[in-house]
Image (cartoon, rainbow, N blue to C red):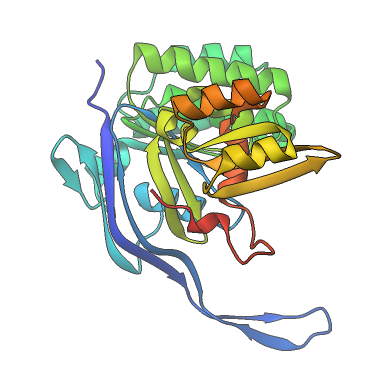
Length: 323
């Protein structure tokens, strides 16, 4: 049986962490001010698609994902999760939490029990758990289920967490940096398994990763968080149309760039490459060919970096780019 994929909606969500006292290296007591992890986030997450959740460190990605899984509650605003029009507050809601699987970097494993015992625990919690898939994935990732997590390398622990995320087959599956520690062959095997099982058992998958270049082929939608706010939320195709590059002689490139917003510039001698906001029209493409200027598309990772880049010398910032 394949359940209906879950969607989610957040309205004006704010998450603040209270002030805390701590000791410095010299033993002095200091008080940290309250911090804001999410600041007025309003967001719709489409059901039945793979959504990439991107952002720099500290952007609020993990906080957002834990709200959906009812690990935390918002300080302000509302969070709703569910199937179709039946969206409910996930906090202390057994129906929602039984159908949402969050896997974090740690894997959330029982360190003092064998991996097989952890799987029995999740099998009791997740109504759509597939034991055969879990066994096959452990074999693919070369993990011994009789071992305890403490006896596994970081990469093997991550592989166990990835296995839980896929074998749970939850209507809302959330994978938060689960690849950490995996070597490249294991990561790519994991990505292939996501696509294969998603095709057979459609569900909503949220995937948070810093390895954007590796995982962008999986994304149908993209959410970019920046400093606790939603910078953009759109399809991957729409995001890729947000920028293009021009490479060639300085004068020709400057002429073609016109008044477009410049996201990045790189110069080597008489040649310059500029990254511009938006998509080129037919006239720009024809003029570029005539002027000997190379017109290129931007990989999702490059565009993400440009859009979230720190403050520039001219006072502009990637965070100012809006839909």
